[in-house]
Amino acid sequence: MELAIGRYPIPTVDAVDFVRTFAPDLESNMIEHWRAAKTGEPLQ
Image 1: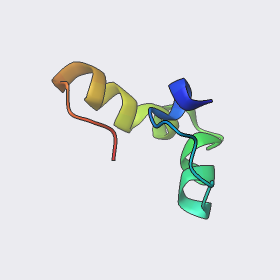
Image 2 (image 1 turned 90 degrees about the horizontal axis):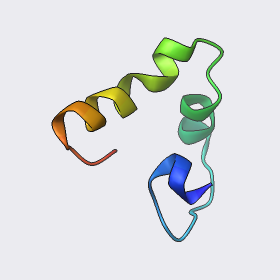
Image 3 (image 1 turned 120 degrees about the horizontal axis):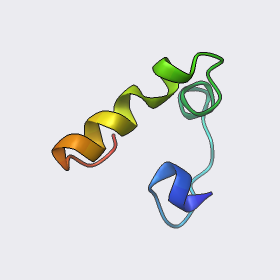
């Protein structure tokens, strides 16, 4: 899980992280991850 969210130790999941992680629309789920992968910016 820590690799999936980019944070270690694994923090408590809040509502925003839960929705971001399990959004039904893959595109909205991955927007931040794609930006981080392309630019090298850390996930927020």
